[in-house]
Amino acid sequence: MITNPTRQRALRGHKPTRPTPRAANTAEHQAVLAWRLTPRDRWIARMLWEHRVLTAHQITALAFPSFRSGRQRLRELYTWGVVDRFQPFVTIGTAPMHYVLAPAGAAVLAAEDGLDVKTLGYRHDRVFGVAHSLRLAHTIGVNEWFTALVDHARHPHPGRQPELTVWWSETRCARHFGDLVKPDGYGRWRDGDRQVEWFLEYDFGTEPVAKLAGKLTGYAALAQATGIATPLLVWLPTSRREATARRLLTRTWHELEDPGRVPVATAAAELLDPDATHPGPADEVWLPLDIPAGRARRRTLSALSDAWPHLPPPATTGDDTALRPNSPHPVIPPPPPMPPAAESRGAHQPGRG
Image (cartoon, rainbow, N blue to C red; front, side, top):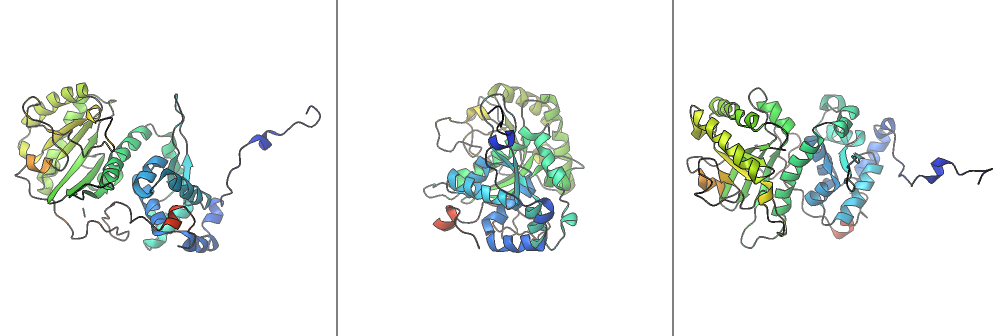
């Protein structure tokens, strides 16, 4: 041992061999991916491009029947250079693996859209920069919020079939509305005959509540400019912070020229039932701002449409559940149907609006 010590490199765990960025962009590698990638793999790549970063648990909830099958497939996608991954430092426990789009995955999406990677706007260093972003936890929190809706919809509901039909990221919202407001996301939920759409303000408890209330003027300006009254959902971490936020939001809301153009509802994460099978934003946790907290019970997400009967139903394109990569305004629906059992085990190789 003294005369022939073991090298540190020999102590490292096995790491799968990956193509270099240059090799990942070659025609040969793209030809291999054309044989290996399934529609679900391409859907995952597009979700990562739209929402910047998703954890292994989130991707599993969105697209796989089990964590084991998701972990196996994500490992293969990582090996092929379709996705990249990192694991943030946490003071307690171990953080889940975080996934972003890798060069080979960007090349696949660009080819699908009839673009080159440069026109797509992809740069690996910028994409991977989210690993060091001070907003990483907030981005993951917003994505977890929407993922919980998809996960809720994927489980049986006797006599009902709820569905998240639209999910826009913060980046897409900023591209469309950034001159007036920058919501953390836009969504649309359908449950039977009920439909509700919303902008999301996901409060992480790190900014002054007065700043959150001040955003109502921007949403009022957007409603006036577009002629569309879109509800605003404010998600807060605790009931105490929600109570404080409701006081300031109510004061600002009443000062608007036409408060009815900006319907607002609030909810607190700690109101979720920890014993529920799939707790999430679809549960009975929402309280419209124009109803005093002590005079009404909270509503489910779908029941919010009854709280604002003056709002027309959300306009639809007639095909809200279809993923259209070539559309300038694609919607991001729940994932494709579950694949055959062989693919679930990772054995398959070829294959507002």
